[in-house]
Length: 278
Image 1 (tube, rainbow, N blue to C red):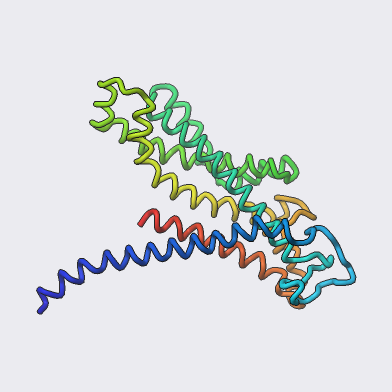
Image 2: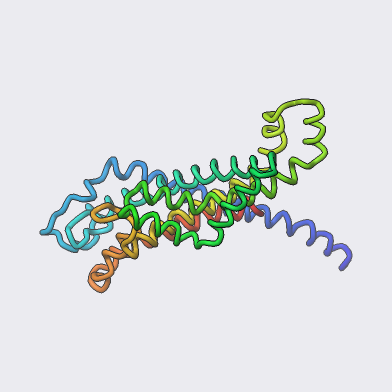
């Protein structure tokens, strides 16, 4: 009896893990799609996030205002929609920039080698030696917390991750017999990138990008929380949490809303990342 059940367990366990991984990916994708839809459509339909109504100071949630109003009478739902859109758009720009720069530099270093590889590795080691959040903090502080300063700081902090991973993986692929054969046949660099490098790097880059979105969003929120990032009255998730602290005992919904969005965004992107690495 034991000899019959053991093979069945061995064959069913991977199948169960794969189904669970697929279900987690679908759930993460659906939830993330809902948040993206809220960030895209919400700012178009809701009120101005900076519009004040002091007579509605700390108004409790209602049918017309599901998340209530803040200390200036501003719509929390409208501010949350604008803050979510800002986080997703800015994080997407940072990740896209870091991915393109880091991937191109990593492939160039692995392909050319010699002094180009030495210079790029030396530059990357400087960024590795500095904490990523410190790089963002320095850039944001020197530029007085502007959006573009935050974008440059986060992109600078992230590109080195793509460079180091892509360089290590590209060196293995470029040294493989298949690539050597393509070079002997003089098929060109585009053939090598399209048929050999990109299929091998795509899962790695997808995983890094998912993790990079989480890192970017949390970095923006952290800087906003300590009031070094974006400045009021701009709607930003970390800044919304900070502004709501003095009123937590009488209006807890002010801080719960942005914290919930941060939590859901983190869960969604990490859920996608786990399924890619599974």
